[in-house]
Length: 344
Image (tube, rainbow, N blue to C red; front, side):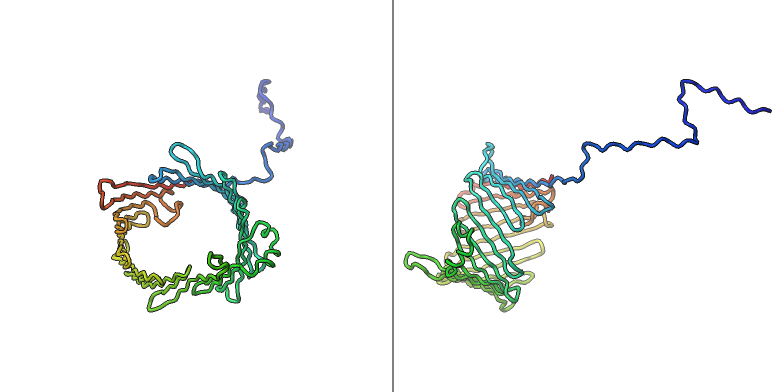
């Protein structure tokens, strides 16, 4: 038999090129007009709002991180229920420099710090409107736990000419030495009776009898405080001299979730007490009484009281409080506070 007759091609059907021919080269696509050689990620924005029913004022804070968290922009303001904005403040913060600007007073507060060496740091603050600032130098001694700090208030020209300030004011800076048991500061102050008087303030801590003894000396007043604490009980007596004001605090933990605290002042016979009950870390109930103001109160926290808003459920913290005056129970006050954070 002969070869089969091939079918007659349809003239309306496009013909495919022979399989032996290579496919035509495809021209590269032109670069898109919206294509970028590098992209800058949008900074994360954090908004925190808080409302206090006692003052009927909203508090707002807006912040965002810039340059891979090397800097931060911050805006804060308040507004009342009518929408009027008050106390707007703007801030730009980095690790070594910060600017805080008050829009109402048109005043700026500048803060900066830098290291001259591994053991020496210089800090400076300047109030533009008051034309006043402070310069401080902190030196770490041979032991890192020991530090010496020299600081002094200086006018605006002193911030420009630090060398001149050191030459003229070196005799009157405030000197503070930090050590493991506390710190002591010495400075000169001007009073009405004496032009210059040497003022000494300090705090010392030491372990004694399974507790911690603290001595705080400030403005010629000495406060001695002892704190004994174990897993179930805390006992904290304190005395102030020369007023001889004696007081003590007693705290008893009945369980991991129940705690009772009591304070008593011998000089005024005033006392106060607080009972606290927690459920997990996000729910806390507190109730107490203060004889000084003759007021009983109860409070409920939803969200960790001392924790940050970002760790609370739904990034929100709520506090409800009831205040009951002892002499006028009918005039009790109910208050609440709400704080919420949004991340964009």
